[in-house]
Length: 146
Length: 146
DNA sequence: CAGATATCGAGACAAGGTATCAAAACAGGC
DNA sequence: GCCTGTTTTGATACCTTGTCTCGATATCTG
Ligand SMILES: [Zn+2]
Ligand SMILES: [Zn+2]
Ligand SMILES: [Zn+2]
Ligand SMILES: [Zn+2]
Image (cartoon, rainbow over all chains, first blue to last red; front, side, top):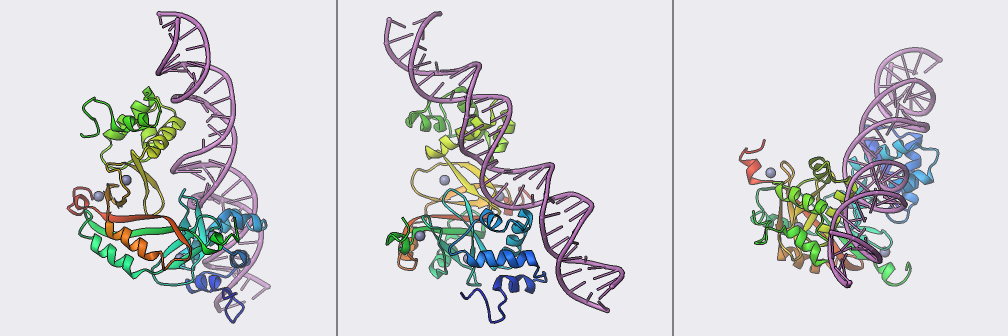
């Protein structure tokens, strides 16, 4: 939908071009596969959808998109990793539907304020954090996916 | 230190006994190795320290301790998993020193309050969450470990 | 187009686990 | 202590999620 800009060029590709990387055929295919996926996806799903693209290339490309902040990597409660297109730019967290894999971003300023307050409670100096919220999304609650 | 109760029996073993599992020789060895480790540890470290215990058994035993809430599993920023003895019982989060691996628990009621407030911001119904704080601990800051 | 460089695909390798299955250990009744 | 049924164990194969190597290709620049 809005993953293509006016140029017909994927935002994912533009993001890595900005970092000085090339928009190659393999990367174009990976970007298209990502943009075609409705919710979050796994690296292996992309590999299966693109048998003509080497597995190493798929992983390398995902890593490029991640480092260009065009993609986010989250983990389900059991640790299984999933990737999702990153719409925003600034620091944010994710909610993940454990039923359908839908990922949404949220920027909760309250969360960050709590973290700053925690500075006094934890031993040492805070250098970073990770936070994910697991949900059953509205679509799943309404029975669209059982 | 306080990992042994009056009986000279490890709390880890007691925890799985409460769940109906046996305190076997292999499990005793794993418990001792865990209690001897200063900070957090990896499964492979235990395997190396206990060549007489099968790798599968080490992983099975860690899993038992985890499900008995006697152990916690955390992940460093790059996702590398580490295990740490769980001192408290109630719900809590962890701070992890990215330099030495020290893990501390904290129960920040503010955090939970924020999560309840987030219920209105996120799509769907919150079913769980994960939160980890990365730090450089006091010991590392003071140069005890470079 | 040619050369320099970036990228690719295949396949080996790695980390962190889990599945299988025959053998050993264990607990409880005698 | 011995018998017997159940748990647990260790060896090993396998799985998932990636990364590394390296010769072959593709891409950009001039
Ligand atoms: Zn994101
Ligand atoms: Zn859902
Ligand atoms: Zn804990
Ligand atoms: Zn430290």
